[in-house]
Structure formats: C-alpha cells, structure tokens
Length: 113
Image (tube, rainbow, N blue to C red; front, side, top):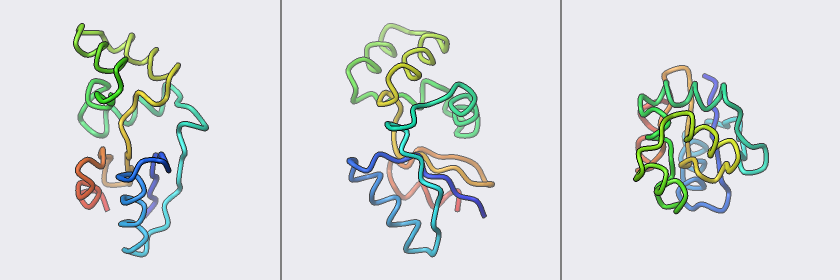
C-alpha cells in the first residue's frame, strides 16, 4: 500500500503520526510541505479525499486561516492563501489507497492504513 505523509517535522502530532506508521512497518513517502509548498491539484485532491473540503484542511490555529474562515472566504480565496502560505494547511495529512485523513487526533491515521 502506498502511503504519503504530508509532514511538518516541527509538529509533535506530525512526528507521532510518522512514528505510528513506522511502528506498523509502514515507511511512508514523506512530503515536507513547508519546504516543497503545495500545488493546486494536490490540495484539491486532498480536500476531496478527506471529505473536509478546503475549509476542513485549514489550520485554524494560524491567525490568517482563522480570519479567512471567520469571514466566510470561498474556496478560491482559501486556495490562494494556502498556495502562498503552506503553513495554513493542517498537519499531518495521511493519504493511502483507502483515502486521506487529517491526523488530528492522530489515531485517525489508522482509518486509512
């Protein structure tokens, strides 16, 4: 099974999700999205596969993301912000053949492995 972890190594939840996968013998493809940035196609796919839409992928602990959501920003505005500032997307995100989840709480990762 192909497993991709969209990862921020500075985030304890993201590090714990990686450890959870590794404990189960899974070596995911790790994408450090703060280094690589996001592309529109990946964000659209993750928004769809998580079932959360772009709104559900936004990291509300980031002031700009929260402000966008609080003002009712549409998907175009959310996408533009996320492409410009990758940190606005929640982490970790795990994607497999079974689907994709935001790993908060971390145990949600188990739903797709």
